[in-house]
Length: 79
Image 1 (tube, helix red, strand yellow):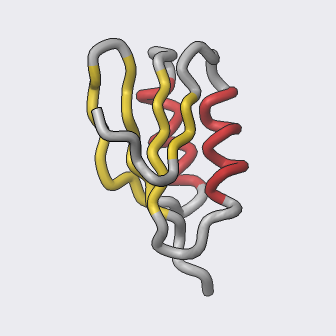
Image 2: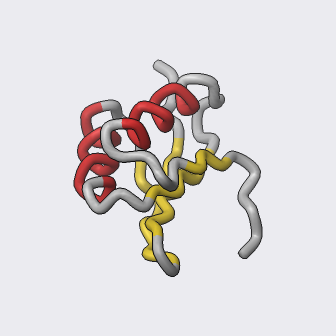
């Protein structure tokens, strides 16, 4: 697997930690930039989309890879 440019590896952490790591990282990205979150907590499939919806981030893709989920999330556009 090719490692993405902006990767948050939250495997081994339980929610809400993957979402908190995503939030902290997304705050540093410029508008429109993408980050990939790897998470193996089963609740991430619910928590990450909910977090993105509430914070105006865009989930570009969600994939189940072997034993974890990969979420590609785009930073919101600045007003």
